Amino acid sequence: MLNNYDHIARYYDSLSRLIFFKSQVNAQVHQLRFLPEKGRVLIVGGGTGWILEEIAKLRPEGLVVVYVEISAKMMALSMNREIGGNQVDFVHLGIEDFSSDQRFDVICTPFLFDNFAPERAAMVFKQLDNLLKNEGLWLHTDFNLGERKEGKVTGRNGTWWKTAFLSLMYHFFKFAGNVEASKLINMLPYFVGADYKISEEKYYYRKFIQSMVFKKKNQ
Ligand SMILES: C[S@@+](CC[C@H](N)C(=O)[O-])C[C@H]1O[C@@H](n2cnc3c(N)ncnc32)[C@H](O)[C@@H]1O
Image (cartoon, rainbow, N blue to C red; front, side, top):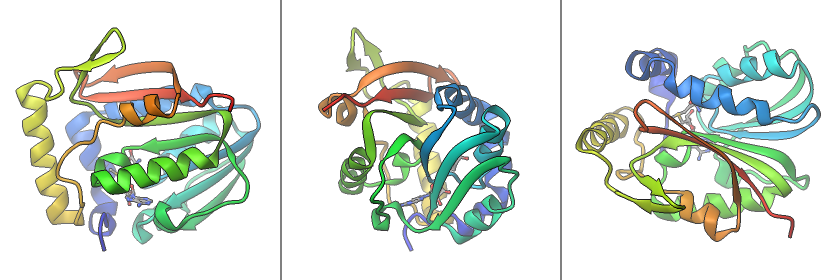
């Protein structure tokens, strides 16, 4: 199976904290302020599910969370989390096979797209775009190699250490989880192309980690 985190599920969080301290966590937790008091939230690739506990701290009730995760081991860990009074529907599927007749107020894709080859990234972007309500929010967190100046992406290859670091990570995750990507896709053009507006943009770990809040237009 591609993008299979089963073998490393138990160590994933420790590995992340060891290498990035809490940058990956902080990048996601900071965005949670954008969650509504009530509404439907789709989380794709939530990993061990720690984010469910962070959500419950900030929004102890009122949310219906649909949690789509492809790894059985990650899903098992997630199902043991303290979710407060929120409703969480756990869906053990690749997002490619997920569908819903109800759209979402918020979609979260934390470190999801860095797993994908370009064709899958394009397909999943379109699928999630269709699942988000007009004026809904898309909380997107991922690695970052580019610099942005006056709305344009420049310095696409980033500094040497980020490129080297990423290449090392891709080699490790190819070996440990059969991750299909070997190159980071810049997702910004997809959001810009679909007319999303940036509500917030923040960087962590010397700009190697980017967290973006995008707002879908009213079509
Ligand atoms: C890099 S980990 C990030 C985990 C978590 N978001 C975090 O920041 O701690 C990527 C997660 O996405 C999941 N994943 C990968 N491909 C997926 C897919 N096609 N559909 C749903 N989940 C997927 C993996 O199983 C893994 O849990």
